[in-house]
Length: 443
Image (cartoon, rainbow, N blue to C red; front, side, top):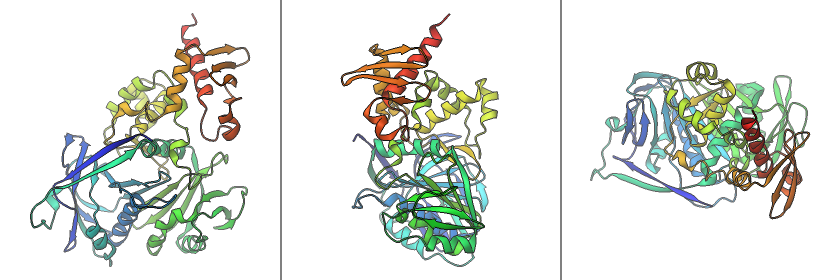
């Protein structure tokens, strides 16, 4: 597994003292340009207790390896300020759980818009766990708001490996989530009762099935149900239940995946968890981004669309299409390309994309999608022969594979194992690329 290394340099540790939370930042992109230690917000979180608990939950996900737990590196959460909210995001070390806290209960000054890493250290975690009551919490995202200085003023430095599997997960989550629907919504008391009824076994798999205004547990798939594989992976929801106003459950309407998302409505904020189809199966292998990335114009379109993103609260496809002169289908593919490098996320509650700038190199996109790289190599080698009736033959070292292009079916072992549930195989991708090229050269 290939890995990049992310280096964090903070001017000091994040601290919480005397009702003031100072979040130390390391690197980031803002509207004002690249910043070593950006300053985004200074003011009040008007709901201190749920905000502290939610931030701690996001940090817990970054610290955890749900599949085959073992000690390892923790990756600092990122925060995006869009002028209306603070979005805190993290991804589990195993690549199978994504967490986000959207805080809208803000009262203060927006100093800039953009994305940065924030330091969440051991002492800060302990302090966040002690926050209670209804008093507002003063927060500063940026170095000027640090309320406690270390004795020696030491800079905090961290170097963290970022495996390619972990990086790809960010792209897969937003693409998969864009195809999910709201499947159930429970009021606070019903939400508390349901979540506390989940089996305690870490590897338990259940289905949440709508039953009137409630959800019931089923051991197998049922009409309208949403799968939760690995019930322990939503454990960070439980400490937030004392604040819960509602629970919303999202999943694919067509049952094409057993991945799902679980969103708690809290006072002035939302906490969302997306979990992969299985504890042993991270989001990185789902392959849902590959068809969009395989289009020849996606990279160029992404450059155009990327220049139009300005950390708006919501990315509107229609508006981007008007501004860029591109059709909506190409805008969507460009957003997928941008998502692969961490520049776009998806908000299920608002059913729309949002802009962020994670500090990962866009040039790594091809390396992070080996199936796409292999498919393009097959096309370049002349291994694809297009046939009538939307079919193709792809010649590989393992033999000739027969592909039904539109259906996405293939005679290879990958397709027989997964049947499209983890994205197209390299043979289907190569046939689709070749078919597009054939259309382009046809007079």
